Length: 212
Image (cartoon, rainbow, N blue to C red; front, top):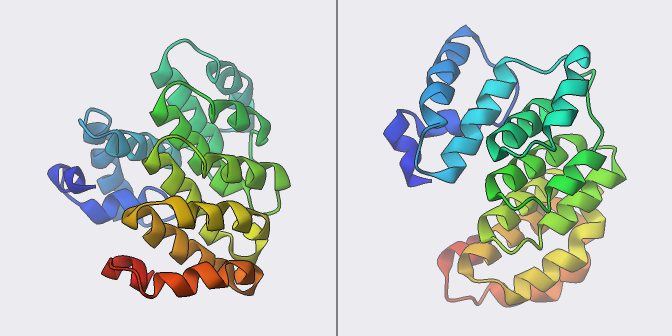
């Protein structure tokens, strides 16, 4: 995401995808999400909306309005609602089911937010996990890779994704193969059926793929 540097701190965008952080980080995130929502890069815009959601988590009483906004005609409203409802929380205001519908949204930014939300919900939710497996087959490479990273973060719990990831490993380009190989590695022994294909990649012409 080269355009991240244009808003001051490319590492900050990564922090926007995780909860927590001190007061200084919160102040910087406020600046980030204020500028980022107008950025020309879709990934930056999505991360900025997510940063805003992390700073102002949805409350239970907000859930009805936010759930209604998931079906709004304005994609920005759907994106904002998805980020707000998908943020990590002890008293989560939404279940995975609405986000499965958003995975088919016409707007790719909304689908990105849905993948992020499902990644937060997937530990302990087979429904969210199934959604990530579907998203790993999205027509857009950037959305596929977001889902692949989320699946890798689940470790052995993402065992059911191994067949899909293995097929993608065989068909994907160098950039895809790098992310997929890394995800399969994080799934660990549960991904043993992908071993022959991973061993083949050790001879891949792309160095990043071989390191994946």
